[in-house]
Image (tube, rainbow, N blue to C red):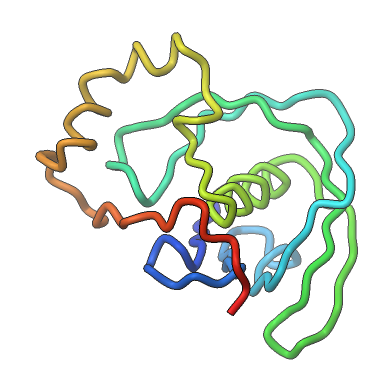
Length: 144
């Protein structure tokens, strides 16, 4: 499964919105004020990538397999549904962005050590990126 998603804070917009565009068209769209109501299932372990890091950095993160999510779409229509597997990971990753949490905050010490050099290059902004590293508005959780 392949999916590209981006959260508004990644492009300097302090709103609780993210967009998903992936293989599973039923899960694509605009997610406004998303909220995880519950999580269940065993933990999945995906090697996650992020547009705010160079493409060659993938960090293993364990997340619940199923999330019950509520959100509004761009037409202000309310949605509530259970989302599973790969898309559940994507949704949790994007909601983390809205809360100022990066994948480096969720992964293990071993993963950080394994990617130490790449991550240090990123943090010093000396790496050559295909995507810019955006400034996070950490702690800015207000809905404007």
